Amino acid sequence: MDEIKIAQLDQQQLEKINELEKNIGVTLVAYDSSSIPSQGSGAFESNNSTNSNHPS
Image (cartoon, rainbow, N blue to C red; front, side, top):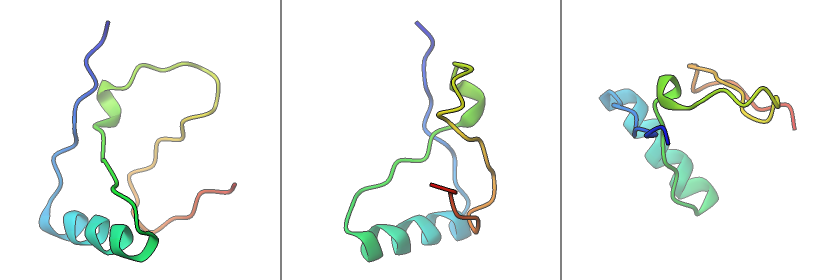
């Protein structure tokens, strides 16, 4: 089984995650997208931008 790794975030990314956690009241975990196996289902959308919205 492949190991999924936690992402290494810079200070700006960490601050954004903390802000989002506070706003929506949940704990978020950032994963390293290169460690996530591709399932081909389209369920996971890889995006390096913290400013975009998911379409659903």
